[in-house]
Image (cartoon, rainbow, N blue to C red; front, side, top):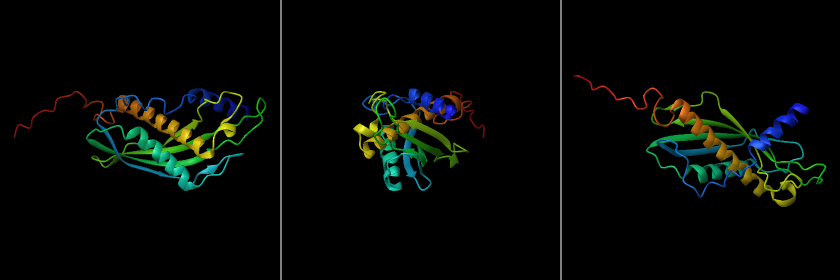
Length: 193
């Protein structure tokens, strides 16, 4: 239990910033990327302890909307598709300030497809876990100040930002959206025939 608490504490520090705060800025460079299909589902979503209840449809729509909000800004010429599955969530209820202030959590799995190559770029789905932004402060949880829909929107925006961070990393390391790392910057030899 102590280990789980330590992990969640570290995650809360890493995800403390609101995932939507940079949406008014130009998108981070992501190569020749264009998101065509953005599919979110939640048939296996597990509701965590002490969570507010929300339907599978609401979970999926919130994640899909936040993903479109972030990735609809990219207009490259190479098409990609996302498959996202909500695996679990906690939408915090009001707690007891200074004693117990629950935080909201969202766990998703992401699959990325390259349309032109007809290739799944993530052989195993990539798991992303996010916590709510800490804009309420450490004493008062979002269960006091936000509706379940507002909590879910915040979590979904944080998840979309983490997806973007993952894609930027993969593009830098693997050349996902610019061709393979070896091929980037190489000239193609002309066929002598």
